[in-house]
Image 1 (tube, rainbow, N blue to C red):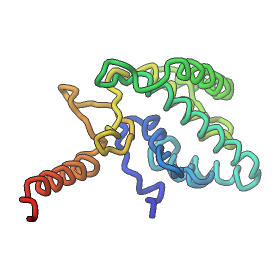
Image 2: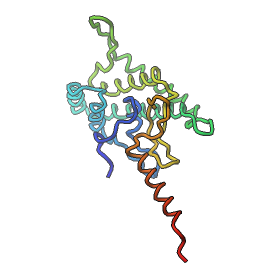
Image 3: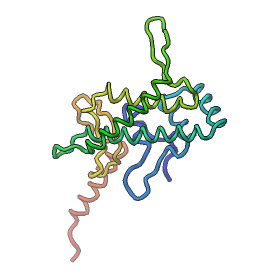
Image 4: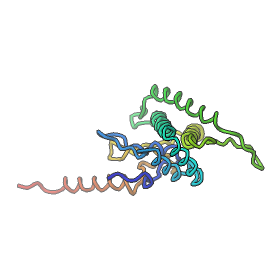
Length: 216
């Protein structure tokens, strides 16, 4: 049975990468942990995209207007799909090519820009004692997708995208994306306690089987 969305390990190193990892890709029936708008709302609190108080506001707005809840979920899924294409195109495969499609990534950037432009149009400037901030999410019904559009922009503009990694599917990993924040850039697995140890254990079993003498 799949984990509940609030049980998902946060391995991405940034909320935008953790968003990408809410969809299990590959296989005949990929599982979407953002199964409905309220799963999205719980996940948004988990990663810190919204506060508990803001989640209450969003929940009320979505209960009063179910179509807004569906629109918010659709917007977040679109951002997730586009960001996945963009980030894959930044990953270099062992043969020197990219893990993604640069053409698809270019189209995704256009769509992401449109999502961010809508979020920015609803944002407002706030004067703090020492600076002016641009606050996204002033409309409760669109607060979650607007904050996630902000997070997508942040990771694309401020993260070192040469440090984006994918848990190696061909070696038995899950395919989740993460920012490699290790000092020497050598991290290979989403979590060593999960995929890394599972693959190591399987390889050990295979070696032991191969070393057994054949039956006469």
